[in-house]
Length: 226
Ligand code: CTP
Ligand code: CA
Image 1: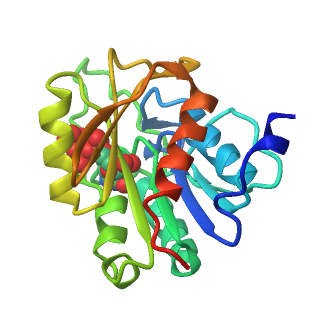
Image 2: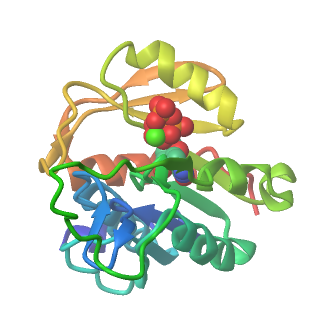
């Protein structure tokens, strides 16, 4: 019902969104992940679809339903997520990186279950850095030419404004969204801090779908005219 009254501010636009955690395997049954629920990314996908966009969501392992009319590509690792995203963005107008991508992955993935050796000693896991999906897309030709509008999120536990401003500049993106308040993975509400070249704006605390609709409106008014 609500969707019916929404202005179709993204009609004719293609939006690609990453969402959820990634899973970095250690062996066939174990791996490293995080508490991202995917709810925020999926809410943005729904809001973008309501706004008339063609929406693809590249999702790590999550258990949230796919919004109606949204195309979903399921992935596990950060490297899979990068490959799936790169396949989608060449036709996109907007890229929103809402995923909580694992910053590191184990250097080796054992193809057999790692067994206890009976000595009581524990294995040591060596890590290597994952590709930065947002930074990679933002450095691409489509983003650099202004044809692809990139939006990032910042997960910070402290000094949000300082870190969010620095992160926007480091990733070289027009808009970054910080989550205000405690890290609330899995919650149904959210409060966003928008950071752009003009400065910062605190939005009111609201449900994730209300936040997502507001974010879509904020993105739409920053897009170059077609
Ligand atoms: N991101 C990404 N790929 C990564 C890491 C992060 O696409 N390998 C994206 C996230 O989806 C988010 C933004 O980059 O939109 C910022 O993620 P965040 O974890 O807050 O920042 P990092 O650059 O990873 O730095 P740190 O975790 O050290 O704060
Ligand atoms: Ca990170």
